[in-house]
Amino acid sequence: MADHLLEVRDLSVEFHTAAGVVKAVQDVTWHLDRGETLAILGESGSGKSVSASAVMDLIDMPPGKITSGRILLNGQDMLTMTAEQRRQINGAKIAMIFQDPLAHLNPVYTVGWQIAEMVTNHGGTRAAGRTRALELLTRVGVPEPEVAMEKYPHQFSGGQRQRLMIAMALACKPDILIADEPTTALDVTVQAQVLELLEELQQETGMGLLLITHDLGVVAEIADRVVVMNGGRIVEAGNAAEVYRNPQHPYTRKLIGAAPGKGAMPEERDRSAQPLLRAENLHKHYGAFHALRDVSVSIMPGETVAVVGESGSGKSTLARAVLRLDDAQSGRVLYRGQDLMTMSPKELFGVRRDLQMVFQDPTQSLNPRMSVFQIISEAWVIHRDILPKAQWRERVAELLVKVGLRPEMANRYPHQFSGGQRQRIAIARALAMEPKLIVCDEAVSALDVSIQAQVIELLDGLRRELGLSYLFIAHDLPVVRDFADRVIVMRQGQIVEEGPVRQIFEAPSHPYTRDLLAASLDPDPEVQAARRAARALEST
Image (cartoon, rainbow, N blue to C red; front, top):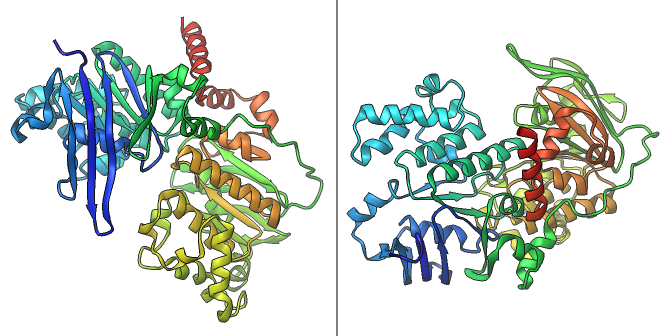
């Protein structure tokens, strides 16, 4: 009998690139037992996803190459198996759910067909596949499963698509489920539902769960053991609670120290002055769907107002309406007393420089064909009165330094940067306009915890230095707790609660706000264990 269900021994993986050899994984050893949850924790580039890809035989070779090691499933080395033998294992014995389900679900087939295909690919009949697909859609909580069978991936929300991926992965009742960042960028309540579902399914089937994540809260909620990776190596491993309480490696201590939600909350600001921007009684609907219902919000000079709520609550619609990127049907948006809603295009053009936006995904919001210099200086091409052309190069260098990058990076292109660096470039682009208000639409939601902390510190420093105001759209409540002065809670297009950050987090009045706070994950495993016990007591 094998000692472990899955065991990785001395695994090393390298990639051959134009810039040389990149050693992505170096001498990595870990194991997973039946019924156990092992979390591999680390930032982007740490090697955690490459390790999982090696287990699933998903590394492109070339340019990748497994240079050493063994991957044992029930004692058998999968690296010595033929391609046909590996195909019999993938999906049937080991299954995987990915970070972005929309990119891994086929857009031209119904979800019922795709789940059933897992069964037919491993010897089952089409009828058996369809029966299994319907059973799984019901089990993972997809509404109206018979109707859902005939729908396509784009017709589901992000949380529902993740449930579809889980259903597909479980189609053949695998012994091991690999979940690669399964809850990144999901709302807190949806994240809690997905993690709860994974735990329930694990208890039912006894499968081993390998969780790839950068989120300490997810580790605290679900993991039995944790492996911490940095620079392709394992720097620490052990029981999740013990590693959190007594981290041995400086990198682990850095990750834990960067976790949001533990600092002092800001004191309430004086709001007696004239607001910098005020939105009054905004209404926005798309046919019968009401995205905004009588929404009003005010932002003072130098203030950060956070808007929280689940997907579909109206957060991003509010942000777009405030900037007149998408006009509301009724209401007013007053910037320094002037109504943006009634301005002509020429008048609005003059105000645009004061109101800037940083989007959630810098990969999509930065033009891949433009250098960093061109991206940042484009603002001055459009608004020629901001800065003489002779000073552009110097000012770009200043802005890059201000956001924590180096001046020589101006000649690079977006694909040559990490996600956190790309977001810094997006912030530098917004600062080039010398704005008074920046709208951040989920600007840090998909970043690693330490990079997220750096970006938040950067934004807060710029606020103090330049007197900036922020409208901060977010679903990450610990980040909001540390960064915001005031919080607006939205649900189904309406504001259900509003107040200073301390009031919202310490004495929430609305049940929906309390539900959001209860669903938010704490990085401390003991805190999460106490919350789980409390939830179990309430449900009995």
